[in-house]
Image (cartoon, rainbow, N blue to C red; front, side):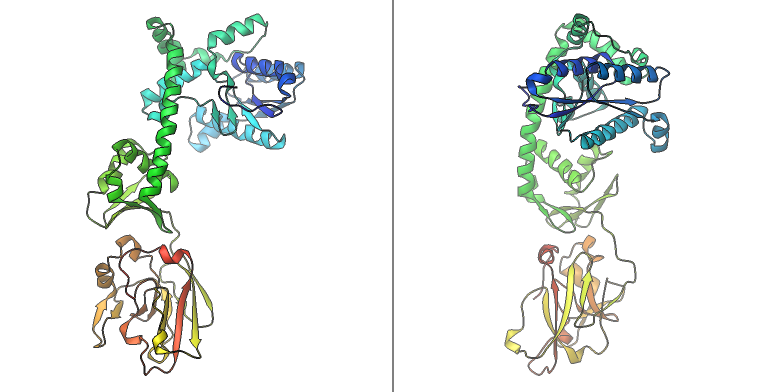
Length: 459
C-alpha cells in the first residue's frame, strides 16, 4: 500500500468478499490493520445465483463479517438472466453487477475506496489472457493496483503466499467449484499455462508482475506524450475533432496510432474497435477530400482539405424545417448560435460591419419574409452587381466548405434565393448601398460560432 501510494489512513474501505480464500485473506489482513490505520471496513458480497452453493457462500461471508464485527451488505442477482437479456457473457454480466453494487454501497457508506482481492497470479493470468486475445501496451500492463477509487493491495502477493497465510491463521473459506473447470478461458490459463510457465521458470509469475509494472510505466509515459500530440495536432470544434494532417505526419507511428485511439475515445467510441480500424483511419489521410469512413458505434470520419475530422454524433434538424426570420426575435439555430434581426434607426454606409457573423442588408430589397433553413436543390446566390447567379452547391465547392458541413449549414433565404450564409457571404443583390433607405442587421450571437466552420469566407 505504501509503494502504490494507497492513502488509506482514516478511510472507509468497501471490501468485496466472495467467501473464497483470496478475499477472506484480504478482509482478515485489513481487519488486523484496522486499529493502526484507523480504518472503517464494510464487507460487500454478491450472490450471483449461478451455483447451488451460492447460498452457502453468502451465509459463510455474512458469518465471517459478523465474527470480525464488520458491517455486511449482500445483493442477490440473477446473473444468468441478466446476461441473456443484455447479450453478455456471464462473466461480463457478473462484473457489471458487482461494480454497480460496490458503487451503491460506497455511496451509502460514504466510502473512500473499494478494495478487491486480485493477487499476483490473477495479474499473470490477465496478462496472458490479453496477449492471447489481442491487446496493446495498456493491456499488457495487466491489473492496475490503483484505478480510480479501486484498490488492489494484494497484487504484490502470490497465491501460494495467500494459501500459507490462510493455513497459518487457520482461516476457513469457501471454494467455488467452477474454478476447477476449464470452461472459462481464465481457468484454462490458471490450470495449464501458468503451471507450465512455472516449470520452465519457477519465478515466472514474479517476472510477469515485474514486466507488467514496466509496461504500465511505459504506458503512462506514452499517454502523456499522446496528450501533448493531441494539443498540438487536434482542434476541438463544435462539429468534431479536427486532426491536422501535416502535424500528424510528423509524429512517430506509435504516438500516431495512440492519437487515433484517443480521438475515437473523446467522441465516445473505441468499443469494438481494433488495430485494423485504426489503420483504416490513418489510411483515410491519403484519400481525396470528402472521402468518408464509417466505423462501429456510429463513428464517422471525413477527409478534409488539411487532414480529417472525427464527427460528433449530432441530432439533425428535421428535413424541411423553416424558421421565419422575424426581426426583433431571438432565433435559436441548432449547432450555430442565436440569430437576431434589428431594423437600424440610424446607420452610415461607411460603418458597414466586416464581421462574418454580423451583416447589414437593404431591407427594401428583401421582398418576402426570409426564413432560416438548411440548403435545398435549386438554391442560388447572386454573386455580382450584374445579377449573375451561382448555385449554392457550386459556391460551397469553390469556397472549399467541406462536404460533411454543407448539409449542416444554416442559410437565410427567400424561396430559392439565398440571402446569407452565416459565417460566409451575403447575396450581392441585397447589399447596402449609399442609396439604401432602410437597413436591417442580422447577427449570430455565439462565441462558438466564430470558430465552428472552416474554409474560405467572403467579407
